[in-house]
Length: 101
Image (tube, rainbow, N blue to C red):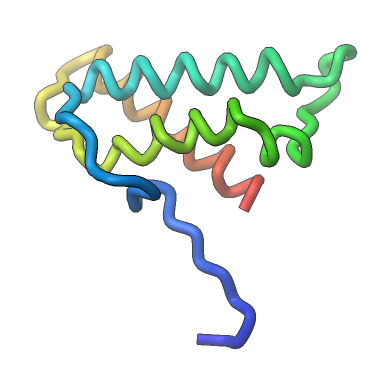
């Protein structure tokens, strides 16, 4: 690996393990966090997101805790629209994580 290279992996827990969470509940918690981030850090004119401020915020820290829980869920328990919604939320979470890191 190159010197100075930092690798960030979204679903490696940053804190101790928490109680198991259903896939549907984890996806909903993640969606709520993402909507909160959008609401708090979207430029007033809707032209973009202040990712610099977002990355330093408590709201992003809370979002990361929700994203960390993805490692503990079983998507196989979801079906149909519920599964699609969870996968879209995970995709959006990965996108936010990729932009910030």
